[in-house]
Image 1: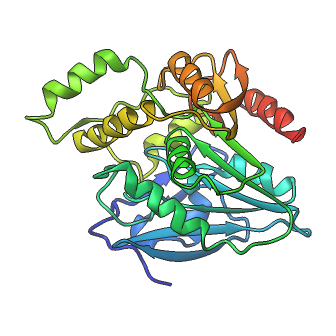
Image 2: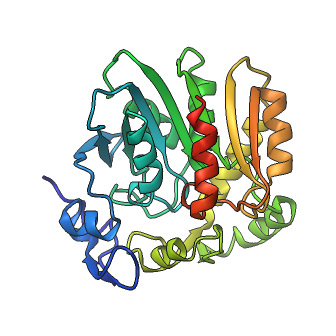
Length: 306
């Protein structure tokens, strides 16, 4: 199996102890191997492959349930994330009988590309379209699920491809406009001519201390916020806000304590542009797929009816 280039993937080996994962070490240069699966507690018999797209190697993982599958789910991760962090959601979907298809986005996880940045959100959407084409047409339900920036990428893909058919489009805390964007936009405009990046702040975006500890130990995490990524996000936001209404149906799950995205603004905009159903969790923060066990259980109960 090819390995991601050490010039493109962080090379620091990390040991994680004191958690349910036990004492494991993971060097990103080893790619998708036993250490990766142990570090992220994601040893579910999945397959791994590379998808070459537009000069980037995307790290793809596919998971199959132990019984005959009832359908397929495309799972799209958020900014700074990668597939290794989505074990809770993957296990839930496998338990429902779905095959789960996911990949690390450009500049994230095991995929190649400059870390945590992009020239244009068009590249994220183009990669998603190419990835969807690799999934065989099968009988059964077709879902697409995105967390945070994964929601942005899904929305862009659906706007570009209105003929794309999914039985469920599920967005968890979708990134449309970020939290306190009017103020942060001024900071971005002031910093853009002088700074290439700023140090990343690891905000407490869930009520799950074990997940926050994993993030800080994760060698695949970027340690900076590239100004170029904010520029690309701001450009996409302007374009998205200017578009007209669609008959597309969406389901949005949103936390009431989210301080990463501007949920109030975003829900109003999404209600104007789409036909949406909203499930609000008053005490939840942003990273819903890694929230506390109690909050995740609420999400799974809600989805059980679909």
